[in-house]
Length: 133
Image 1 (cartoon, rainbow, N blue to C red):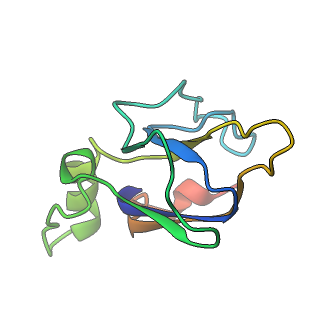
Image 2: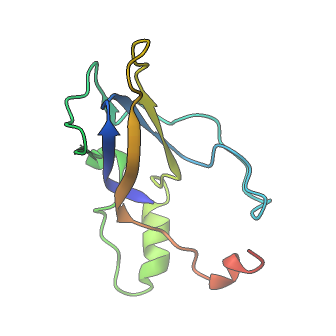
């Protein structure tokens, strides 16, 4: 996926301190034996803060910088799927890593209720890539 933004909803004790982008899956996916896990994030965090001022029940919205996402890169009308994949393949993200601060002893933990993404998804040219899943 090519990300424009990430929205994290925290219900209790907001405490997100960093969000990092990962190029591949962190663990093997049994249904996709040809996809090897990729260790760790790539590049600096897209969000890093000593404290999180998001109100309880509010959204922490992180805008992904244009140099980290090719989501705004234009696709040619003819063979758009192929042109997008070729032009933008250098910047797809497969996952994110969210780090939250440890709360003081006896304090309520950080509770994240949802993580939403906006951007564009790159699909394979042939739906046959999903056969056998």
